Length: 285
Image 1: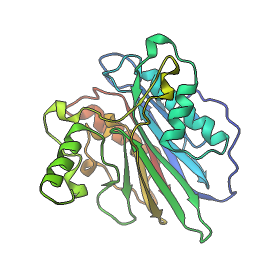
Image 2: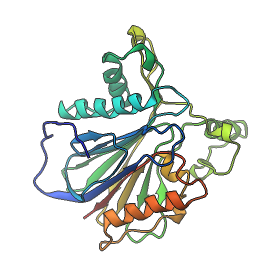
Image 3: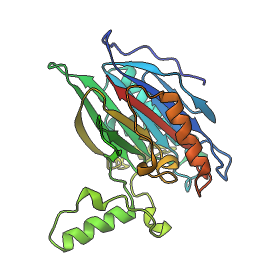
Image 4: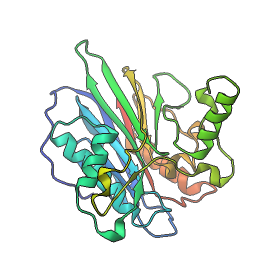
């Protein structure tokens, strides 16, 4: 994999986890790699690659961004998102959707890239004063973060896709005078138009970014315990292989082999890897 060169964010000497990433172009009909990701210190956009298993020290950042295929030049927007994260991380800036939006659109983009769009799923973690790992999950669009608590038999989704289907679920719950349950979200097997993205980052080619809206982002913070795992991935993973078909992860699991198996599941699925796929797997000590 090719890398960008960044100054290292100050970290503790002690690692808190191991992480590994995989990315592949798949059988995308446009023959483009529209996924990009940020892994600890560097950003990447590759047709195919598997990272080495890497120690993770506090603080850390892991993120994926998926270019929205319905927008032209979207591979440039996903790259702009992870490059913005890299700049903010290097400069010790807080990683918020607003900060990423401003960083993306203060850069100069050619007119042909105007309107290119991308999603985001990101985990920022740090050990607090009590020695506990706090992980802040931020997402825009339909890239997701999953959690596997130690000893659990199934992965849990932590993010609610920003799409028409989930908006309709919220609207129906509101009309019925109740709060939608998280299990109501991210349904499968519905009409394709219902999965249309309602929130994303977008490139602008002029000063219009000053008045453009920051995409709606959702964030939550969880306590991560020893033995827990997180997976950050684009929809090219979770759309084709639902999380109930993913393997669990133990202390003995080879993280590279786990991700390669997941990639093979994507290619063996009914969808036959019709989209790009990127996944970052983290196992905490």
